[in-house]
Length: 141
Image 1 (cartoon, rainbow, N blue to C red):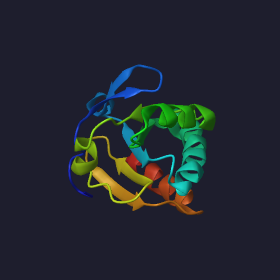
Image 2 (cartoon, rainbow, N blue to C red; image 1 turned 120 degrees about the horizontal axis):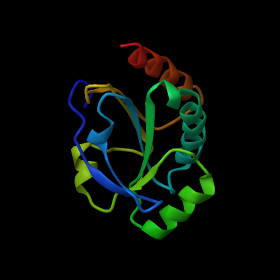
Image 3 (cartoon, one colour; image 1 turned 180 degrees about the horizontal axis):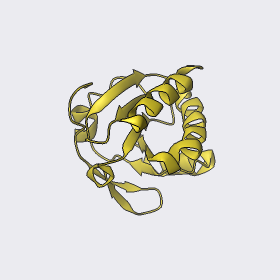
Image 4 (tube, one colour; image 1 turned 90 degrees about the horizontal axis):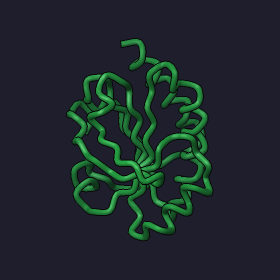
């Protein structure tokens, strides 16, 4: 997926609002696909909340996307995590296929022109610093 245009989508957030990826063209976007059953998702969400708080004003948009089948439990999990960035609920298989999702969590960085520039599958300590380094590069472009 790196080097390709990020497939556009419209998803409903846990707050009830619909968000479209293409609305954020001109900003750097971090997409984090997660599932409540994937243990690393919890660690990733906490790290991404800190990154969002630091870089939002600089032009970063963080979007969390639940790919869980159980929407209500996914919504409850997202609310319990108390992250400040939008959490979106994917209700079908198309988005997973479009983004070639393999393992959760999966994080992508999309540049200002809509091209995927970085991809990471899973999450381990230290990945958040790699994200920050890549985000800084993209924000400077």
